[in-house]
Length: 131
Image 1 (cartoon, one colour):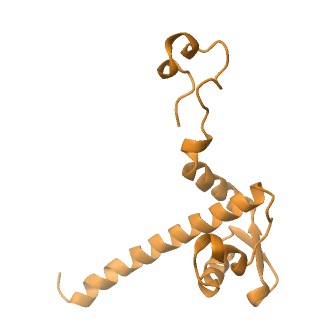
Image 2 (cartoon, rainbow, N blue to C red; image 1 turned 45 degrees about the vertical axis):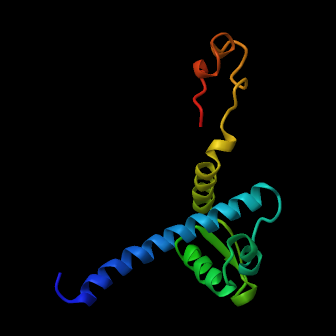
């Protein structure tokens, strides 16, 4: 590849896109969890800082981007802005949460019911697949 700068700029866009995906998943997953646990239904950047270990300014930028993309609904302005999951954000946050905790939230042996063959043949015969 000629021209070192061309090679570097080709790698910057995917890195930025990957970072945006990472932030989207992290923020939506945390907001989904906070809402599901009844801790809070909306949050500001300073509320999310302890969970995401990031500076409030970075979180504000990401929250604004997610609001512009339709994942979040904003109320208020500036540092006082609060964000809650939109319908699209709730669906995506739920997917992130399910993916992240699939091993912990799947059905356990014995939850399948009394007629399952695992009661006669052991856990490997369970009709409910392991997560």
